[in-house]
Image (tube, rainbow, N blue to C red; front, side):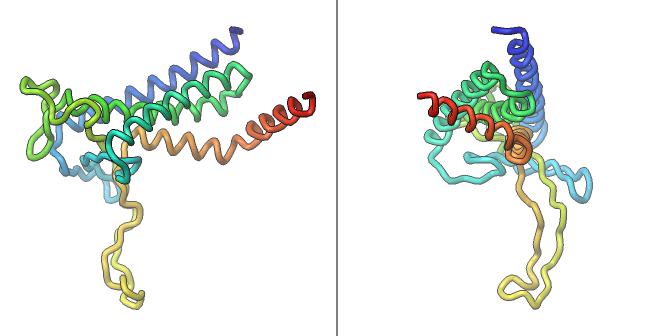
Length: 213
């Protein structure tokens, strides 16, 4: 393993650890200071709103809990393996670091799903206790993902002339999410917007290999 590869792996590892620390620190603080559904107004467009969910990013829920958690674990292992191999093959940090953000975000939410049910008491109507004597609120793999960031950028009443929904209250961008979700989105958007050349070079390498064969 060359020094360049080691340096890239070190930088990627630092990114992963920093994201995980911020994500888990914020979640643990929320769990041990707020009750479920409690909200703190920071500004008119930024709230700390504590919710928990079983599902995907931004509070969406579609799948069976065990299936979802198992899928996340398989996905994060695959992403980690892919990043490692990509760096060994010369991937730039411009690709590796966004990929590391995706990896760290997925891992952060996995920690919630797998362990939080065992290490925290329920937050419903009370502030949760860390490592409660009587055990947590759920078993292994049945923990809830902690979300707390809410940015209701626009809150308004829709004009009455709009069919069906006119006169109703409307909030633009109302999902509640966490640091892990943010890391995943930033990583995905960056790769899609700025890493076209990287994937084009991979396609070119595959074509050269096929032509040689």
